[in-house]
Structure formats: C-alpha cells, structure tokens
Length: 220
Image (cartoon, rainbow, N blue to C red; front, side, top):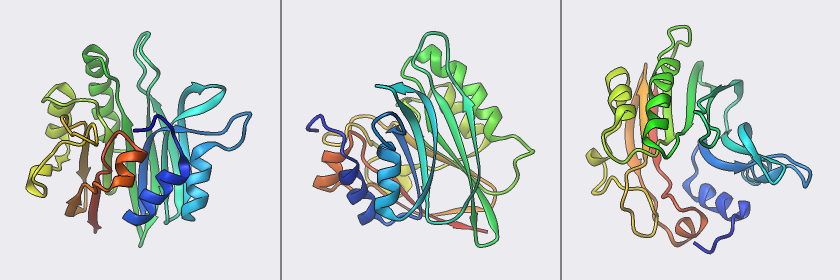
C-alpha cells in the first residue's frame, strides 16, 4: 500500500500464518545487488526455497518462488509466455512429506484474455501429465475473475476449491477493498481440503496487494 516491497514485512506475515509450504509470485531473486527477496524471506523463516525466474527486473531475477519446511526434492519450470506479453512461467516444486511426494504448481498467469487462453490449455496439459504421479496442488494468481477458459479447463480436469464453502467472501484482490477473485486452488490425488482462511491483518494489507490465501490440507 505504501509502494514499497520489503521482504522483512512479507516474512512477518508468513511467520504469523505458520504455513509449511508457501507459494509466492512476483518475487525478486538473485542479481548484482545480492541474493534478493526470495533468499531473505527463506532465511527469515528458516525455510528452504526454490525460484523460477520469468524475466529480469533491474538485472535481478523476477518470478515465482516456493518455500518449504519439508525437503524440496525436485524443481521444474515451464514457459507460459505468449507473444509480446510479459514473460510468464509455471513453477513445479516436488516436496517430500511423510513418505509422500506433493507436487506444488505455482501459477502466475497473464492479464490479457487472449494470453490466458493460450496459457489455459498448456497449463491444464502440464498439471495433468500422467507421468507426474501422486498428490498435486495448483495454486497462485490466475488473473481470472470470471469463469474463463482457464477456470473451465482446470475445473474439468482437477478438483476446484470453492472458497464460498469456507468463507463469506471469495475475493482476494485488492486486499484493502477486495473486488476480484484472482487467487485459486486446484488439487488432484490423495488431497483433502480441511479448511481455508483469508487472513486480513493490517500488516498483510500493507505487505501485499493480494490477501494471503491459506489452505489447511491433509495428504494420503
């Protein structure tokens, strides 16, 4: 809200939430002026992390990051860029949890309708790849606030979390006066959604323009 990006503030919000796995978008990574925000947030929380950069921002990596208290055993990036629009990448982090491998797909799709149409089929194909077995979570900023092609395809191929079943409101953006439901969660395999929260603390409103979407899940 104050136009500043401060990793210590973001880390404070995440520390209060206490999540074991975190998916972040629009993260500054390594560059000529140091390790970047992903490294700082991971160090502050004592969590391992991996990053999938989509482009450079002032000579630093810029993209998605997954943090985890559990071991991250593999990490893959997929290009979702379309024509001259801002480069976008899908991040997959494989996390070892109690004998299971949870595949976490961290999404940040484009803002243009034609761009998302291109990304929709590719995203749906990647996350339903039969060679990647086990429980899957697909989550992040889909930039789709109405039922477009992304929502239609993902809901047809995976289980969709309806925030209305858990919360009085589905909207997550902008945090101060939420008008749009941009952040979504899909899942497949032996995953059970136990609960959903949208923490709306003063610090969370200051740290990000999206409300943090928190899911309590059970695997296996």
